[in-house]
Length: 330
Ligand SMILES: Nc1ncnc2c1ncn2[C@@H]1O[C@H](COP(=O)(O)OP(=O)(O)OP(=O)(O)O)[C@@H](O)[C@H]1O
Ligand SMILES: [Mg+2]
Image (cartoon, protein in one colour):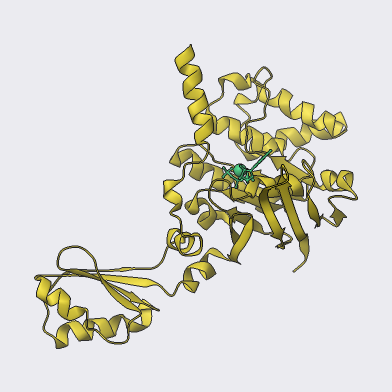
């Protein structure tokens, strides 16, 4: 495996005291989809902005596609495409005009960009709205346009900062398949940040959980889930007495109450030890009403490592508030 990005103690301190990114050391492999998952203010956008040379680090550096972000920022820019967190397309132009503008910015000759733009539009099913003004686009169309704006210069690396922020679930799932298509067909390395665990689970080959500017853990979503050793069996009995007897089961990680007549049994691996649970229930002649087995989800991984519930966070809150205020003023 070849590294395409390596950061070396990459650090950003805003205004002399806000440590947004704190000595980050990560490696991203060529061809993978790498996710940065973290709550509001974790340092995701700041990291992306440094790697894409939009802002300079306070200390440390990174090598992106073989170029140093500080010593050769122009070299870095030639190899990357960026889809920023905020919407960037010009609303008074059509989708195609936006793409042409970017192609011209990168000095792509017309003979090359016309065909390339056509291919990109097709890749995300945007041929039909391509010649309409962006102003009239739906949220999903806009995001699809921005996705390919990042690809006009045929980058080796594509950065997606919150690619599905604010989209409804169905449109979001659709975006995931476009991202997968892009990675497969265009052979790019993709770095994406997200608040959505399902998104990281569905897309990322590897993910780092980031909080307070530091990486807490890195691995494939499967590895992270397995690292919890936290399969959970929930059993509901006919009576509370029976539930209390169940609490004395030996050789499990933990047993806790879980609502009326119910216990929550944590096992290292349910595949191995579920039979022991069942045997214990029958040896004590307990009558069960319900039994469920749950493998840990990325939510639980996130909670374990950050101590926070990501569902409580809603990205872009500030923006929503602003938009609502604007609407009220009208
Ligand atoms: N230009 C800036 N000036 C001062 N502080 C900043 C600036 N940009 C970001 N910060 C602060 O740096 C920290 C990291 O912010 P950043 O935007 O990188 O986080 P994030 O993980 O992208 O968050 P979100 O999920 O909300 O997009 C936060 O505490 C934020 O308030
Ligand atoms: Mg951000």
